[in-house]
Image (cartoon, rainbow, N blue to C red; front, top):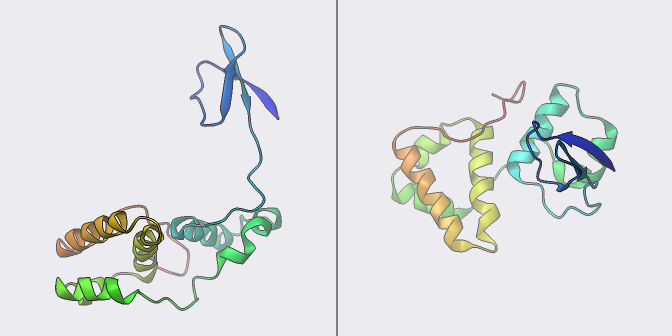
Length: 146
């Protein structure tokens, strides 16, 4: 699929080529059929769009096995609990909203499999911000869950 884009428009991350002095041609390809991972942030965005009644069946089909539900059980990995307890911040973290906790633990855990040093860096930042009693980052508000 191709469309014309004038030079005044913000360029996209899609493949683009210059057509003439005033416009570009941009190639947009569909999402891969077998997406391997849906991050916790994107999962919460899906829940929000579904709660607002804006998600179509066509949008759900490619990711239906990864969506889950906001009501699904949530477990914090023991190694994260241990480090929060060592910093004496576990109780403070437990007082935060469920969706915030899911988001932060998902953000830390998604890096732990392939990049443990990045996962530890993220956990250190969570400990630092929890120590200041500050919630940070993008938190999609899902109707009925905050």
